[in-house]
Image 1 (cartoon, rainbow, N blue to C red):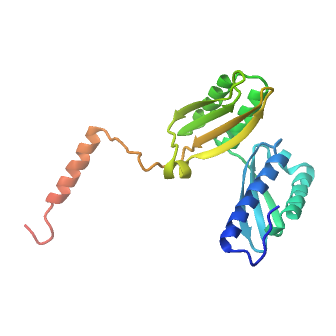
Image 2 (cartoon, rainbow, N blue to C red):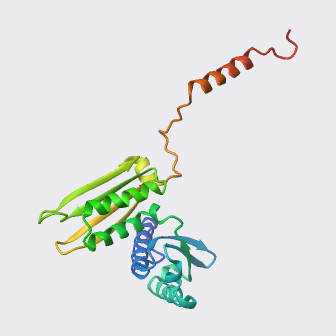
Image 3 (tube, helix red, strand yellow):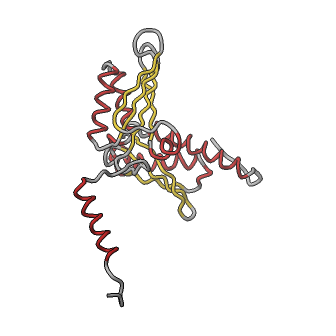
Length: 228
């Protein structure tokens, strides 16, 4: 549990606040796993902290008459006093196939059930792209075949690996699949459909370009007021 006092330097507060968010995210993932947890967002409101959680099945997260979500609110408020009074809002993920954490969890579950990793990965990749994603990357690391660990990558569409586009546009999820040979790391990165990349260009047909040029030339040849 992360706590700090008033005399702690500001830069350390930022670090500790980041650790708090990580611990809170891990706690919510464990508590809301059956509901299909897909991430959370903190929002400061007057005298309280609002936690927005995104799940596949809101009814399971809320519980009968709201008992489950109230229990989680009480436990979060007790375990993370830095947040102050806590309220949790549950939102349904509109398109689970575009949420990397949900896709990674589904893929890990398929591998744990004994489905071949290539078949499971290609199936997940196809569903992501059919949902409208601009690109996707799936990376599996561990003892996939035999006793030696290896890494397999599956990619489709536009994928940014590094730099500002990679950090800003690609959303990532990570889950571990527990199999008999050992743990397999499942990493899913998705380029959302609404992202506007700086290097994207629109190629127009020649006819449309010629029409635009004629309009520009015609406007430049029009005489100004007072000229004959």
